[in-house]
Amino acid sequence: MKTNTGILGVSGYTGQELVKLLDSHPNFHITKLFSTSIDGDYVNENPASFTLELPFVETYDVSKCSELDCIFLAVPHTKAFSYVFELRQVYPNLKIIDLSADFRLTNPNDYLTYYNVAHPNATFLSDAVYGLPERYFDQIASASLVANPGCYATAMILGLLPLKDQLSVDIPVVIDAKSGVSGSGRSLKLCSLFCEVHYSISAYSKGEHSHEAELKQEVGFKNVMFSPHLIPTRQGIEAAIYIPNNQGLTQHRLEELFKSTYANAPFVTVMNHVTASTRLVVGSNQCVLIPSIKNNWIVIFSLIDNLIKGASGQAVQNANIMFGFDQTLGLN
Image (cartoon, rainbow, N blue to C red; front, side, top):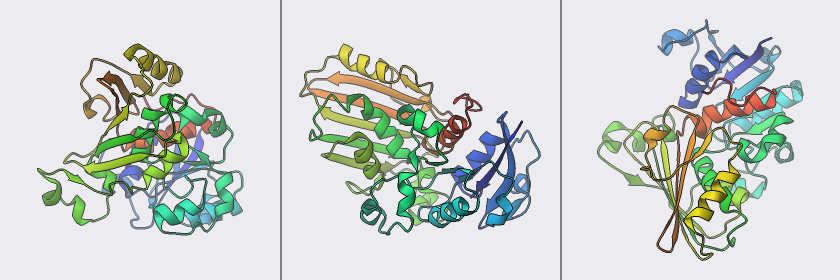
C-alpha cells in the first residue's frame, strides 16, 4: 500500500530534489504538489526523467491535504510557522517533515537571536524532533513533526558528535566550511548571480551564521568560530574542523571513536588516507568523515551534498523512519 505524500514548495532546489527522490521511491506516492509561485504541469516545467505520472502543481490550501499521510514543507525560513500550525489543527495524525529552520531550535529565544523573529508557535517546539537520524532515530520513529537539520549544521554536527563527550565544551573549535551556490536557494540574489560567483570564493556570515545555533544545541561546544564560504560549484559542502589536541588523542583512538559512533549509520562513512573532496558525496545521501591527528591538532573533514544529505535526502530518510520503512529505501 502506497503512502500518500504531498510536497509544498516544489519550485525551489530542495523541492525539486524531493520530487526526484520520491518519484522513484517504492513506498511513497506523490499525491499532491503545491507551490506558492507556480502552477500547472510540473513535468513540462521541469524537464527530467520521471518514472511515474506526476500530479499538476496546485496553489496550496489546507483543505486539499485530506488524503495525505505525510507532507514535506520545502519552504523558506519563517514560512512554515503558519503551515505547521494549520496542518496540525486540521489533521492531527498527518506526519510533517519541515525542511525550513522553523522548528529546529528548542529554545524560542534563539529564533530572535539567529533569525530576528519571535516564534509564533513555541508550544510546538517540544513536539518537534530534530531530524538527525544518526542521533535521534528512535525519537524520529515515533514523531509526527520532524525538523530537518540545516545543511552546514548536518556536516558540522556529524563531524563533531564523536568528540562530544571527549573534549571540554570550552575548547576552541574552528570550522572553515565551503558550499556550492545552491545552498543560497533558487530565489534571485546578487550573491548567487553567475558573474558574482564565477572564478570567485567569498566568505559570509563569519561567526554569526544561523546554523551555528544548531551546532551548539546538538553538540554543546561553546567556543566555536564558524566561517562559511560560497564556492563556484552547484552543490556540495566541505567542512574542515580544527580543534587543539589537548587530550593527546592518537590517530587510532580518534578513528575508533568515529567508527564506533557511526557503526550503525548507513549514510555515514569514516575514511582515512583519502583526499577530502565533494566528489565523494555529490549526488548521494552520504556523509564522508575523514578524521586525523596533525601535529597538535585534531583535523576532521566532513563532506555532504547540501541538497541531499543536507536537505531533501535526509528528509526522505526521516520519512522512511517515521513510517517504519528501512531508512535507506529510495536513497541508494
